[in-house]
Length: 326
Image (cartoon, rainbow, N blue to C red):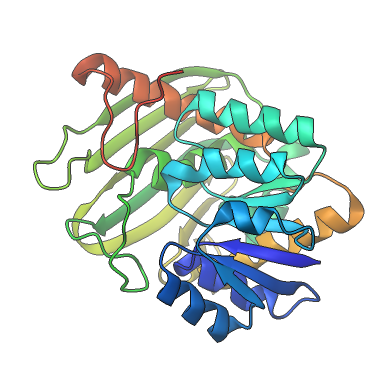
């Protein structure tokens, strides 16, 4: 299977490293800058590189595309790949609006191709048994809380590379936690969404803090809060059930329950499971674990928070998130 990688940031690196452990062929890299694209292709053994997605998609040898580009172009590039007849794995988020997400899903359904999302929180193997008990009615979630704190006053990514794009705390980082909540709530109707998304920062031009609360009709709650102003990183989540409390410290690589603390897979090793699932989904012709339609509940929650902000401050384009005028 010939793979095209769009983007050479941290996720491009992680995905390329795991692809090298599979039978997939690292075929083409699509990047923004020629020098960086050529260097990345040589480092990981891609056969070709280009700065044109259209050029890559015109190559009939390419079977699947992994889209690891800036969030604001996910929708456009995903639809373009699907319409070109390629399977795709799309980095989170699927789009920067609910309407955009629905457009990607519609394109995916029309294409008949496999299209999955990189939502790694769904793939935590140490959570599999918990989800099985929840679905069997043996354990009930009462509360989920997630924290994401990082310093983003300077636009440098996790690899130390100064990026050309601006991140979005709601549509990117909160999407991880909200999707996990919707995945574990497993279709339980949502009663209410409340949010507080900050004013535009004078330097970055984006909201830098956010708090989001979701209540279900089963009296369960999801709380996500975070800030781009933090002087050090915090990245963890807590799941409280009627049987136990599960504290996942992603940075420390630990899970704490009533029985004690145990190590868990690193974020990168866990993310590798997304690639394995995507390749298997193509091979077997099944939907990926994080399929397009399955992420729409999370997108509806994020859109509700965005609508509140738009009502308060006026719907507008901001760095990293052009206004959806459709």
